[in-house]
Amino acid sequence: MTFYQKIKNRLIKNKINKPVSVLHKPENNKWALVSLMLHNLQSNNHTHTIYAETKAFCFALFELGFNVDLVNFFDNNAAIDFQKYNAVVGMRKHIDDAIIYKHQSTNNKLKIITYVNGPHPYFQNEVAINKLINFYNLKNKLLPKSVSFIEENYALQYSFANAIILHGNEFVKSTFLPYAQCAIETVKAIAFQSPYKIDISFKEENRKNFLWFGSTKCLHRGLDIVLDYFIKRDDLQLTICSAALQNEPAFYSLYKKQLENCSNITIKNFIAIGSEDFKQICEANTFLVYMSITEGNCASVITCMKNGGLIPLITNNVGVDIDNCGFNINEFTEQALNDAINKALITSNEELNKMKIESKSYGMYGTSEEDFKTSITTHLKKHLFEDIAH
Image (tube, rainbow, N blue to C red; front, side, top):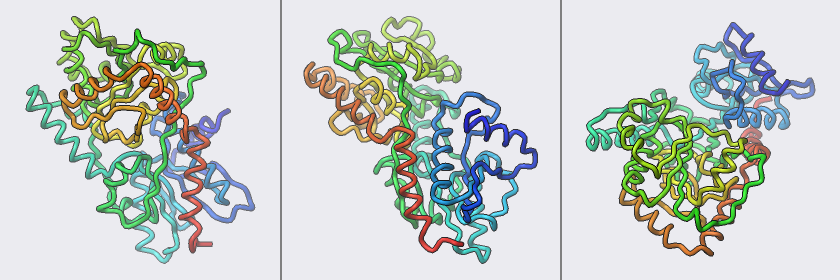
């Protein structure tokens, strides 16, 4: 039975909505509460990175000398006795509750570290509403389910935690700086490794082939701009790997007729990273295009770089530093996308081959589960062991 199956079984059996012990040994004399884990505890699909992140936080704290309890971060009604804990780590309401408890009790040495996997909620909600307005003005359609709003922003933890561990780069970090009263430590995304050997060498026949590989919330991920552009460019090939169109019929209906007549756009729906289909798709494309309005060191982009050496064409808000291995899309417009694509298309074969190698190298560095655990262990050790309660 896997780590997650054991935890899942305990949480499913836990009918009284409280934290459960997941890692314990008698010689550990401190207690930590981790508020993470996806809410769909009945699912056997553990491929989402939040599971790997949860495991990393639990074991990092355990190896630092804590007994570890875990509470589901979507269970807002969980009964938590914060007096039990020396440290509370994780996301959402339980972290804000811990901050309120700390400042209303005598347990002033309680350490609280919030983990965030994207920009500050104030920034995200601002760009999300602007995207919705711009799309409405262009298409006369209001699609709020196609953008990602943070309706419960739990603002206390971004200002009053002892530290923030941020899944993102310096751009994502900058969105917290006006509000944070604590240290902000950044970590890279976990990118899963394909079990197949993928040929990343540049091929001339794939010079005009682009991949869009992403999650749901089509407007948020910029798929509208990508579709509007590639529908007009039948000289370019676009492959879309996502369940987004299938899950967002209101968005898909706006493009359905056009897509049915586009021989240059292929829709593959969801593709598992561990599948042979993913290998073949990586080998058939040269570029990855992604125009998301907010991300936190976007795992889908890094995954395609790590496995396929795909050359990213991305917006700054994607939260990935592409350095010399990709092309920046400077605005959320077709013109900006066109400018980036034109730069990519005039780049020499030799340079593109070099960029693919650099892309894979960037994607490989610091993105394994063990790398993530090492990074957060360093940050946890730094911020938990200064005057910690005994």
